[in-house]
Image (tube, rainbow, N blue to C red; front, side, top):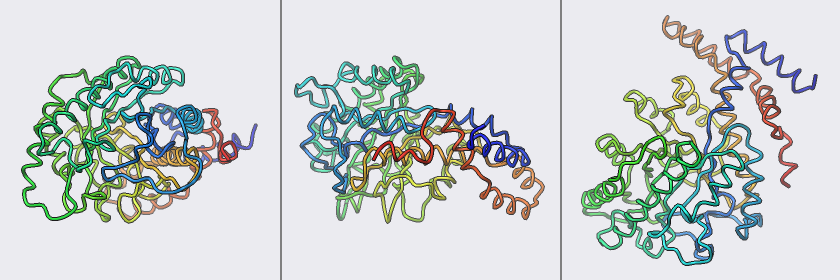
Amino acid sequence: MSNIEKNYQVAKELYAERGVDTDAVLKKLAEIPVSVHCWQIDDLSGFENPERGLSGGIAATGSDPSKAKNKEEFMVNLTKALSLVPGYNKLALHAIYLDNGGQNIDRDQIEPKHFAGWVDYAKEHKIGLDFNPTYFSHDKADTNFTLASYDKSIRDFWIEHGKRCRKIGEYFGRELGDVCITNHWIPDGYKDYTVNKLKHRELLADSLDQIFAEPIDRKYNIDSVESKVFGLGIESYTVGSHEFYTNYAAIRNNCIVCMDMGHFHPTEVVSGKLTSYLAFGREVMLHVSRPVRWDSDHVVALDDEVKEVMLEIARNNAFDKIHIGTDYFDGSINRIAATAIGARNVKKALLYALLEPTKMLEEYEEKDDLVSRFAYVEESKTLPFGLVWDMFCEQQGVPGSDWLKTVL
C-alpha cells in the first residue's frame, strides 16, 4: 500500500466519524464539471488578430515569457494545463479562438465550421465546451459601446455576432452531448458623468431580445449574461449591471445570470447571493476569479470565499443549477501553471465542501444547538482534506503536490 493510500485510510476513518463517506465524495467530485477558460494561456490574444491587443476595459499585465506565441504553442500548452486538472472538465472558448483558415472572417460572419477543430479536440480529450461571444478588442467596440450603443449599425453588428455565437454553442452541445453555456459580457459604459442611464439599458434589453429571439433547445445551449460593477474606462456607469441582468433574466426567462466573483463591490460576496437564486429555481453561471482591490482577475486561490461559494453549492446539492467555470488572466507568471493552479483550487474547494459533515451540522441547527453547530463547523476546518485530495489526484492519473515539476 502506497503512502497516499495509507494516508487516505486515516482520513477516511476521521471523516466517517462525522458521517462523511469519502469514497462517495471522490466519485461525486469526479463527475462535477468545471469549465476551464482557455485565455490564460495567451492573455486573451486569440487566433483572429493576435497583434491587435486588448481593449474594452480588459487588460492582462505582466511580462513572463511563457505566453503562447502562436496557435501551435497555444494548443500544446493548453493540453498540458488540462492534463494537470483532475476530474471532468469543460473548456471555455472565446469567439476570437476561431479557425479562420487565414481569411478575414469578421465576427458577424463566424459559423460553427470555424470551430469544428475544437469539437474534434474536445472529443479527443473527453471534455465539454462552453462559449463566449467576444464583444471587445474590435474596431466596433472602441467607443466602449456595443449592444447598448446609440449607433444602430454598431448594435446590429454585435447582435448578429451574438446570434451566431448561440448557434455555435448549440453546435457544441449537439456534437458533444454536453450542454454549452454561451456567456455574454459587454464592456458598455462611461468613464465619467452619465446623464441618461435608462436609454442605454433600454437599448441593451432590446438587443438581447433580438439575440435570444430564436429558441434553442436547452439541452444543447444555455445563454448567460454577465454583470460587472465597473471596469477600466467605465468607472462611473456600467450598462450591464447585476441588477439589470437579474431583472432581465427573471422577466424574459430566456437566459441565466452569470456572476463573476470579482465583479462586485469589495464588501460583497457571491456566496451570500447564490441561495437567493436557488430559492426560485434559477440557474447561475459562476465565474470563479480572485479580486485584489477590485476586479483584477487574479489566479484563483484556495481562500475563504472560494470555499464558502462551494459550500453553498454542496449544502444545497445545487450542482445541476450552478455551472462552475474559471475566469482570470495573469501575465506575470507561467501561463500553464496559472491555469492549473486556479482550476485545481476550484476542485480543491469543491472537495472541501463535499467533505463537510453537513447533515450533522443541519441537525444541530434545527435543534437550535448553535454552540455545537459553531464548534463542529470550526473543527471540520482542520480535518485532513488534503489527504483525500492526494487520493483524488492518484485516482484520476494526475500529478499530486509535485505537479509543478512537470511544467517548469
